[in-house]
Image (cartoon, rainbow, N blue to C red; front, side):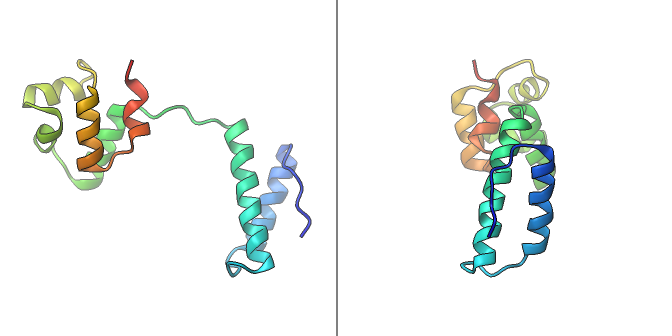
Length: 119
């Protein structure tokens, strides 16, 4: 195992190439350990060099609606009346913390996705 920090795009490309060779290695084997360490190094490099902006809460809700085949009416238990649902989805009303909690608990939308817009 010859692992070193990933400091450049070339290092990243080499790490990806090595991961392809190691893919499917048994957990706990030397190759499996190397695969796990390389994945962590790649994740650290990408987090530092390619940060992801916070997700948009409304887009997260719409994504979950699409995934589960939900309509605006299905959001009423989480957001309130149909008018309030419409205001939220059209960005005329911000999510309250109570709405965020209900969306997380009921639809399993991650808090990180829902809290990006809370001031």
